[in-house]
Image 1 (cartoon, rainbow, N blue to C red):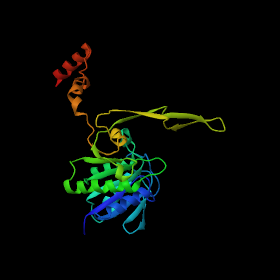
Image 2: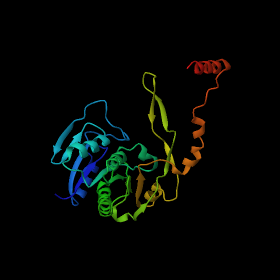
Image 3: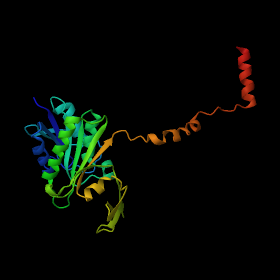
Image 4: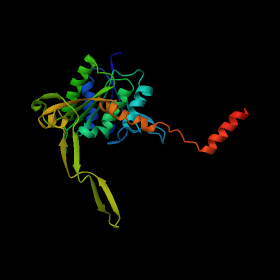
Length: 272
């Protein structure tokens, strides 16, 4: 058997982005698809613990799961596939996953889970609004996958790939980027239903960006594919020594005994 590739997503088993990715990667190896049975956007790294998970065979080497993207990767690697894949590829997502989005993204979390389980993993997202150029995103996904299969990835590292909404001929190339910061204005919208009861939408009317040097959003705006290496260890090593100064504040304090307690202790020692 040739190399196996696991494809998953958070847009669901019927997503055209998933279909485009499967077609593009079929030239590289044996593609297995294990994806949610419905859209699971913005579920982050959720794992299903409150209900049984069921795997439904949709077609040859294609399965749907009534769970999250992370559930799909777990089940695929540990139960569904006869052997672990050479790589996990999540996408092509309907919309970008830039900056802080990676904290909420089911697409990125699926790749994180693959990395946790020791398999090189890539998340791929396609810029767009009403229409998406999934074939373009899938083509660049295949190019990244080829490089990963050839050169590997550092330990505990995954790649987050975002493809601009342009015809392939107008994409200028790729840039290696860092995560930007995406800030929404008016992030919670308050409204009232016909009965006068208040409800809320978590959304944003406008957004701004910070971190401009080598940032993923800048690369996309300028017509480049953004490739961001993400490390699982989010420890801020640069401030460890600073916060170690707190450690003495948490040491147990010796209780000061009263004179009566000290006398009682001496009497006890004398009687022994």
